[in-house]
Image (cartoon, rainbow, N blue to C red):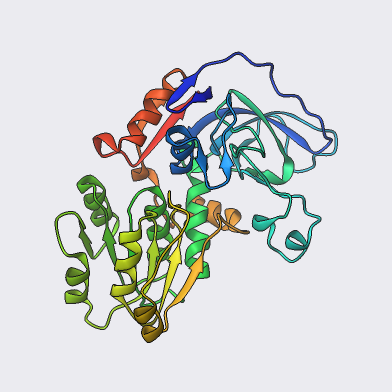
Length: 341
């Protein structure tokens, strides 16, 4: 299934990908989750300087079954069930050698224009290092959702000590939920959530939010500070909106931290220098995830987090465009649309 223009998508017959490296793994896809970044490419044709050249295949949240392996592959064999890490680092540059393969100088990423075609296809080929075996007890949905969940796990690790923390999550889409679940697992005291979709706010309450509010209908800064007059310890910006960033500064305590996880459609953030300086607020950026997928899969396997409520809608592969239109329009309280093969 390929993007052929803005909000245009067509099924096209392509030759099956072939194993070209001894370390390659050929995968039959079982399920794919539709991500917000996929929607950016679908509706805007770009994210920042990453511009789609049509036709192009998106998709990077997936799970599947190994059908063939290169002759140097050691960890996997045909028939294995796997989660897919969409990043393909070079492992040779300065970033990779210092433990930062997620900022690899030569990074290739599934479904990223100019880097690699996505996994919205019946078969894909990935390096062994991007394939993680999962137990039979783990569902395909859980395996695919491990990718956004790992971003949340990494964001939480990069933030502050979670024990007894007062946490804000602005934007409760899949990434917001992916932050909330590990935050609770690691001991956060209270979590305050905002979103503009009522069904998502209700889901956040069901998942453990102490407070949830809609910035379109209430003063969320006043609402949160009424509950926490001293302010929050950390706020995760998960919706990519300037208004949410302004709210984050207002609801943080002095010495608090903002974690930027959402991808904005604009090129720049702005801040109140006066507020930022007087509160001595720290700002951290989250670039996907780094060395967090194994931990995430362990959390799922050991039932330390429950991502099942995230998958709210299902579509067959032939109806992929309908899935993208649903997510792009935020219709029907959608959290995560899954595409089955």
